[in-house]
Amino acid sequence: MNKLLAGRYLVGNSLLHRLDGRVKIICLLILIALVIGSRSVSSYAISVSAVCMIVLLSKLPPAYVLGPVGRLWLFFITIFLMNALFFDTLNPLYSWWIFHPSVAGIKQGFSVVVHVVLVLILSSVLTMTTSPTEVTTALESLIKPLKLIGVPTEDVAMIISIAIQFIPTLLEETEAIKMAQIARGARFESKKLKERAFSVFPLVIPIFLSAFKRADELSLAMEARGYRNAKKRTKRKKEPLSSKDYIALCICVALCLVQFLLLR
Amino acid sequence: MVVNGKNISYSYDCNDTSYALRNVDLSIEQGEFVCILGCNGSGKSTLVRHLNALLQLQHGELTIAGIDVSNENDIWRLRRICGMVFQNPDNQFVSSVVEEDIAFGLENYEVPREEIPEKVNSALLLVDMEGYDKRAPNSLSGGQKQRIALAGVLALEPDIIIFDEVTAMLDPDGKQEVLEMMRKLHKAGKTIIAITHYVEEAVHADSVILMHEGKMIASGKTRDILTDVQLLKIAEIMPPMAVRVYYDLLDAGVKLKECPITNEELAEKICKLP
Image 1 (cartoon, each protein chain N blue to C red):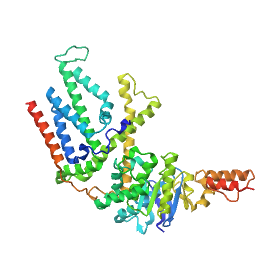
Image 2 (cartoon, rainbow over the protein chains, first blue to last red; image 1 turned 30 degrees about the vertical axis):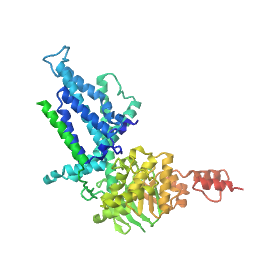
Image 3 (cartoon, one colour; image 1 turned 180 degrees about the horizontal axis):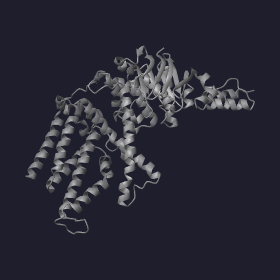
Image 4 (cartoon, rainbow over the protein chains, first blue to last red; image 1 turned 90 degrees about the horizontal axis):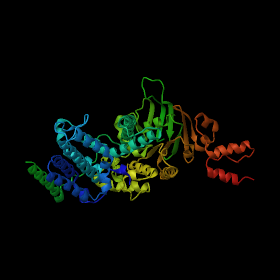
């Protein structure tokens, strides 16, 4: 399975695929609040169950949904260790040099990692079940009020939509550049933390260069196909929200309320 | 003439005297298949990017189907008449769903929503990719990706189609698919302008324009240009294999009736040797 596909829209007919794009974005924001608000075991149980249910309803292959999480394992371990070793220096379980592992630190580290993992999964499910055009249309509607302060909302929506779908492409590019550098002796897999950290720098410049080149070529291709600005385009018919959209919104709001009550 | 250009010059840096294009005259007839041939940096892409006003005309005159490219009010009409497919298919897709990507150009021209699905299907049919509408472009082969990029252009029903080194990143099968598509569109009456540095891709064109260091060093019938080895040498282009074999045979004392430009012609002529 191509792990680089993670995050890209997958055509499907699940309940989540059929939900309105605007509702999906609002639900995502509500669920992020739900996840970040988790503090107790019961609230974590609600958040994790909600995310699992959403993944099941999306009918997406779990490997695709969990792909981005798997690739960031080093990041998660780093976050966990930093919290576990430095969070609480006053009540450490044990102290050695600058390291002070503590119960509060371990709890905090676990909490941060779970929050980021769940938010990442929710965001992946959104981009995997919503086509780029739907994302653009939904964003256009949701940020419409910003027009009042002169924000070109149609263009912003187009930019965000293209940026989202280019993330997997840039990951692919990063992998290719990494391989090319390994072939020339770069040591990304070195066990020495210092060597490993420094090895990232030579990746950054070629990735930026490549991203700018892609952006340049894409803008030419868009212009060649008659793109002027997002205002002068065929508008998508704004479908009225259906009963399933309202139900999804109600469930998300209800979950958030339960979480709020548990926090009190 | 559908394309009529006189004295076109272009410099990427206005303060610089090193021109990417120098005094190029260009004339292409309606329905013609023209190949612009030249090595890297010869000014081919710079020249064709003037045809749909992706580059602003700095010096000279250029009209496409009667439209003056320097008239900014006509740029959008011009880009609908003159479609362009680029080298890297991955950098042309604005959507990760084939049908949405093909619809992009139509939406830019405010084609009514209800007409879009039919036009998308017709474009897919033209490039022999029907049934791929729900697929992700990145799941396709290089040749298929270029055909989808072409479908995005064809959906706008342009009269002129520019292929800007479209085969450069493709494997041999992908190349054949795209070249076959060019020939098919030419037969259907479209004006085809293909730019390449692979001489073998020029053999099916009606005429060839030879570029070198920003200048047009020759233009004429494909056979006349591709068999002129001295001219090709100046342009730093290797002659087609059939032409090289013809001259090798000539050196060895074997004279074929006429210089072939394709391998098939070469084989036929060798078979006819007494």
